[in-house]
Length: 147
Image (cartoon, rainbow, N blue to C red; front, side):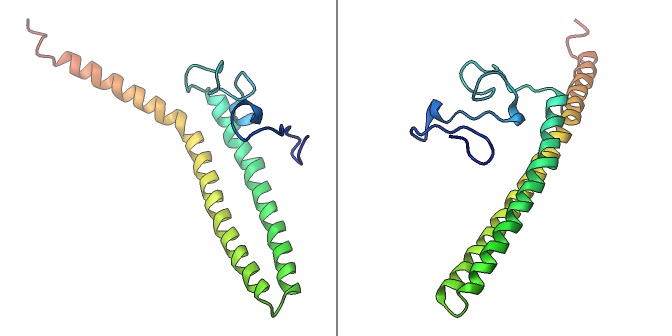
């Protein structure tokens, strides 16, 4: 049965093939993405795929997470007011504080992943160029050159 996001979840056990969900962040062959059996044999992705994943984080995941957080904060705050003077209100406050800290951690992680995706191409290119320069320099100064 589809959930709110339109994803289909089977009613089977929590593991294996009965939890197949495709995402746009790993647009590889197969219903479970590039790392499932029959998927891509390596971890390679194109610069365009990295850019698309970073853009999805920025335009969908971060704003939707913020929206969901605000909704949960509003609902929890309203429930807390309804239980004012009861221990339940204090419990809801603790839950809300914990939730806010977890969301802050998640938002930081999303920002880090977005930044890493955007910086990966230049890092890889820079490393390739650097290693090539080292090999060319080392090859000209080799002790075997005089033999």
